[in-house]
Length: 280
Length: 236
Image (cartoon, rainbow over all chains, first blue to last red):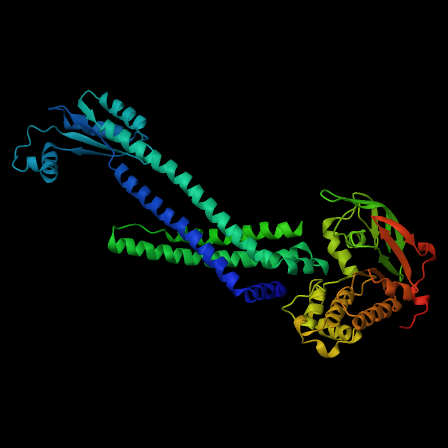
C-alpha cells in the first residue's frame, strides 16, 4: 500500500498540469450533469406540488343527514387510493370562495352552496384513470349529487409529468454519457502519458494488480475532487438563481454525497478501462 | 532453460515473423542472436519473456510452457529473467538507485533489504557513485549499466538483451559487453540480440543467426553449447 500511495503521489507530481486538467474536466462534466440534475429536481418538485392539488370534490345533496355523510367519509377514507377526506360545509365553502374568487366578495349567504367532500389521493394514485375510478365510486353514494375533479386538467398534468419524466431520463442519460466520455478520454490521456512507465513496470515483473492499483486510486481521487468542485459550482449556481431569479431546491445531502461518489466511480472505472487496454 | 520447439509466430497484419524455429539455450550459456533488421530477433526475445505467444509450437522458459502458462504467472517468469533493451527503458523521473530499487519493490522484497542490494549492484556495474543521478545526467553507457543493474536485481537465471549496445559508441559497447561477460561468468545465461558482427566475431560464444524468421546458422548444437563457467574469457 505504501508503494501504491508513493506511485500515486509520483504520478500527480510528474504531470501536475495534466492532473489539474483531468480534475477540471471531471468537475465541469459533472457540473453540467449536476445543473441538469438541479433543473430536473426542481421541475419534479414543482410538478409534485401541482399534483398534490389533484382532488375529487363530491357535492352532497341538501338535507342529507350528517351521520350518513360521516359514515361515507369513513368508507371513502378507507379506499387504498385515498389520502384524506374533508367535509366542507356551505359556510366553509363560501369563506373559501370569498377568499379565492373576487366575485364572491359581497356574498354573505351560504345557503345556495352545497356541502361537499374533498377527497385527496395518495401519491402514485393521481393518474387520470385512478382519479376517474375513485370519482365513479364516490358517485355511487346516493347522497352525492355531483362529482368533479377537473378531468381535463388532471389529464394535462399527467401528460406534462410524463413528458417531463421521459425527457428527464433521456437528457439525463445523454448528459451522463457525455460526462463519462469526456472524463474517460481525459483519464485515457493521463494513462497514455504514462504508457512507457506501465511497460517498464511489466517488464520488471510487476503484476497487473500492482500496475493497475495506483491508476485506480489516482482516477478515484481525481473523480472525487472533481465531484466536490462540481458540487460547489452547482451550489454557487443554485445560490445565484435563488438570489436573482426564483427560489429553488438544492440536492439533499445524501444526493450530493452520491454525486461526489459518482465522480469517484467514473474516475475509477475510466482508469480501469484505460489501464486495462495497456495490460492486454 | 530456454527451449523453442517448432515455433511459428504470425502477426495479423505483417504475416509470419518466425517459421519453425527450434533451439535450446542451456543454463549458464552465452548466445548471440544475429541477423538483419526484421529477421525476427526481437520476436524471439518477446517470446522468451512472453510478451508474445507463439502461433504454434512451444516456448519453454525456466519451466514455464507458453502453451500452458497462466497470465498471472508471467510476472513471476519476468522476475526470473533480466531484460535489457537498446533504449534502456529507465524511468526518467527516478534516480539510478530508484530505478534499480523499483524492480525489487514490485516483487514485494523487504524494504530494509533494498538499499544494500541496490548499492551492491550499482557497484557491480561500476556506478557506485552515480546512484543519485537521474538518467538524463548519465551517458548512454551509464544508462545501460543502470538498466543491467536493474535486470540483475532479482538474481535472474537468464539475461535477455535486445541490442544492448545498439545506441552506444565503441568504448561504451566494449564496457557493456565486458559487463555481460562478467555476469555470464558468474553463472547467469545471456541471450543477446545484436547487429554488431564485429563483437560476435571476436567472441567465442554461440551464434544463432536468423533470417526471414528462420534459423539459418547455429554455431553449435545446444547439447554442445559452451557453458560460460567453463569457457575461457577472451580479452578485448
